[in-house]
Amino acid sequence: MRNPISQSRLFQFFGRTARDERGVSAVAFAISFAVLTPMALGVFDVYQSTEQRGKLQDALDASALYAAKSNAYTTADINTIGNKALTANLRLVHGATLTNASFVLNGTEVDATAQVALPAYAPMEYNHQPVTVNSSVQRSIDRLEVALVLDNTGSMAGTKISTLQTQAKILIDKLVTASQQSSDAVPLRISLVPFSQSVRVLGTTTLTGTGYNTASHTGPNIPTWIDPQGKAHAAAGVAFDNFDVQTDRLTMMRNIGQSWAGCIEERMAPYDISEAAPDPLIPASMFVPYFWPDEAGNKASGSQLNDYLNDVGSGTWKVKQQNHLKYAVGATVRAGTLMPGYTYGPNAGCGLQPMMRLTTNTAAIKTAIDGMTAVGDTNIPLGLVWGWHTLSPNAPLADGSPYGTTHLRKVIILMTDGANTLTTRGDNNGSYYEGWGYVWQQMISVVPGLTSSSTDAARAAAMDARMAQLCTNIKAKDITIYTIRVEVTSGSSALLQNCATTPADFYDVTNVANLGAAFDAIAGSIANLRITK
Image (cartoon, rainbow, N blue to C red; front, side):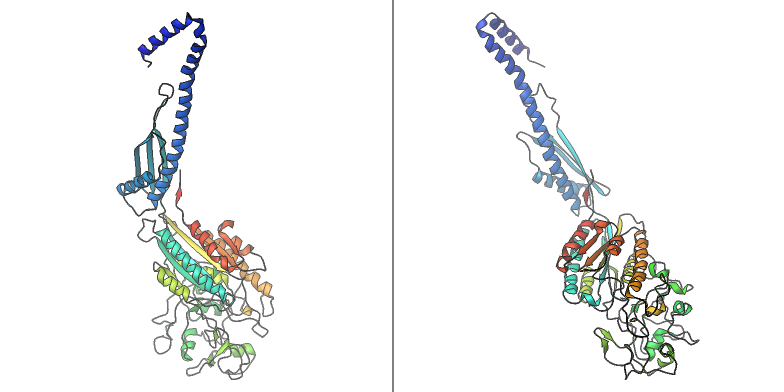
């Protein structure tokens, strides 16, 4: 409301000047000033309000984010932290005051509100209301189960494996730091799956002596999900015994003074690309211990690559190779190495660092990473499926939380420097013995008809096809897959690109020195703290 005394004086002034023509210009100026000045001040008020709103919003967003990152679990503590941050961050325009600010913990969200009172330069022309803004931040409380599936093949030797070891440990530290923002009691568990041509799922298991029961096929260190007899292999005609005797691989190892090193072979299809729990009534669902058979010939002559026992009986090379009678009590294994990283015997090629199950002990994971070695061919599907097994709630490990658990994320980080390989050998077997067995055993069943003379391309195509379907199966369980391809200059990256959850989750690292940058990007992607509105 205008002051009546001021209005009276203004009318008197206008009356006098109306009778004085010489005051016309002065009157015009006075009227213009009286009208335009409040308008100009009103515009300034609007400017001040807009500027202050932007400053207040930025400060509140930053303060709510800071409060959400804290380890506070009550609204009172969140409010204290948020207000301190807001006081430090807020810049007020001249004459403005912060009149109210609150930070409320609403379930998994931090909801913030702040209000600033502004000075009024044109109180008659502009409706002055306090500036009020809101912000809401979703706390990073998701629990993480992360499987590191890391290539340990022979081509990783040297700078690659040492760089991988360094950067993988840094990645773990970043995940630990991010997990500390969570209010969950167990925010992070990590598993480690080093792979090459196989995966070493257990550490050395002692089978010498009397611990293993050859009648019941059980032992104190042998998991129940292991099928030492390889019944599915026998049913498929790929057993390495051609007699009417169901051989026991662990018994044969014990007979010749060997201990199973803990490596595993691929399950028979369709279980090779499945997380289905092992069932003794379904032999193909069980897991078979890795066993490279003694190849035909006498160990003294070394006529074949892994010829570590003397043959028994006569017949073709395959008959001699499959004869179980040579694994007799007291038979001794040839000493030495058949090639770098491979010791003669049934465990040849199982020089890997053992896998580690999901654990909160990240120091132990980092110690295992330091122990990784580079040896063998590339069997990505076997490494990847065991990464899945470590995250699965199903046996054989059953360590993973149930699928669909609220605020739980399952992640696989797959790193490799090569393509799937089943190396060609110019002999009867046509390949090394690997997680898929020999190539002629056709355990890679998606492409029937593989033989000892099959090309490298045909072998790789068979493995790639299984891997492609495996990736699809894993992603169907809402598991995020990140894939990293390191220093691969030939072939297509399509397999790994398509395996990743999104194209952005595939990293093509052309120089191993940049592996850390890829891990950093993945760590940032995993962290899900964000401003929601």
